[in-house]
Image (tube, one colour):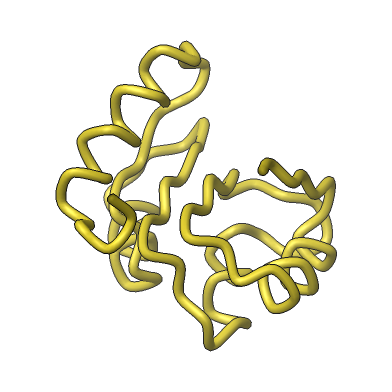
Length: 96
């Protein structure tokens, strides 16, 4: 099941409601950025994959501090996202 959110504020609401096992989040969301979304919720998905157009050292440190498992630089392919998720899934056996 896939759910989408157009804003960071809505993402916070949906993460709390849905408690997803996997979260793919853009770090540059409107209203509330992706890092702030992750800090705003106490629930942490088993896998968090972040997408960003800016991969500076400070952005990567902030992502790590928000428990992001991997960061992919945009633009990227769906294949890269799927391959990265598969690698992360292998490290998170609870997702099988």
